[in-house]
Length: 88
Image 1 (cartoon, helix red, strand yellow):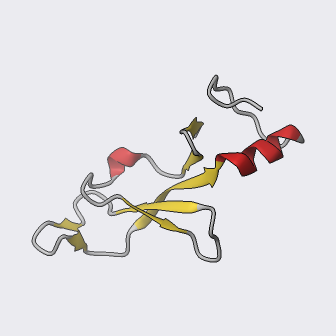
Image 2 (cartoon, helix red, strand yellow; image 1 turned 90 degrees about the vertical axis):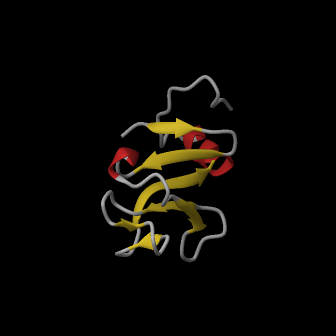
């Protein structure tokens, strides 16, 4: 899946967002990281509105990489992003 550029992050999608309940998306730092965030969500039809939670463990939908760190990797030719908002 293509990488998406936001103001502070590069989003790496692992799974399509339309496969998840729109009420269930949550962001949190990944284990052992203070810079990378994971977007976790509940698969469609597994969200319990009564309990306001997922019936199973939420799944990783996207990873947010800090833009600054990605720029460093790109300077050394280790990534390819075509986006006018991403320049160094």
